[in-house]
Length: 281
Ligand SMILES: Cc1ncc(COP(=O)(O)O)c(C=O)c1O
Image (cartoon, rainbow, N blue to C red; front, side):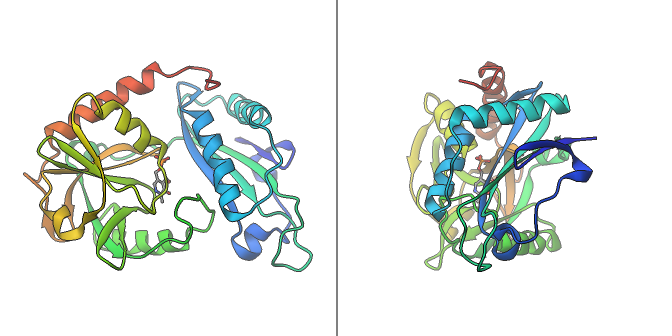
């Protein structure tokens, strides 16, 4: 059985519980981060821990753990589960609340490790459809546990045969997906939005590996401009790079994953192999 870290203890998954007066349950108040392991090594753990702390700061949640403590707890939980390829969720809940709305200043730390699910091969070979949804996230730079918008948007996407929903703002600019960032190629120029999004760790890696290969622009993309892209892809820790061949009812480029996207998919695989195995970089 999977072993989780729950508020100071390593426990089997079926005994992993927290009290119901936690603000995570009562008010959806808390933050989390999500990463993958590859052959047992966490990928970019330090970057994810830094973002976790920053997310807590952005929502005003007390964060008493040092980077060293967190690294040790996460690595211990990974090792106790012995999965080569696992997903890791590090969650900080709002903790108990006497008035059921404001935190008492005792946040809880939870680490959940489970086997990484195999994603459909066709996403990578054939590409996926996404839909757009007009929705502006509250505090977009924070990875809040409240995914109300995302859950509703993804349900709508699934109903329309799409894999992801992409948020647009009220002015018609593209932002990001429910659990991904978005990139578009116009010939050899790669564009990704930079404002009012979650700063994706995969996005950062892509910007790094794409730099020597393509011209890069971080700027807003209008929805009508997106339809005219030669290639589009989304990125995220759970899925890597996934080519997008349809946005709403519009086919993108040739309707097949493009060569530039495929080159970046290859580069990302190479990059994953080169990062520090211990994750303690
Ligand atoms: C809203 C949002 N944007 C972007 C991402 C991608 O970020 P990362 O590459 O760090 O997984 C996520 C990840 O879940 C997300 O929830």
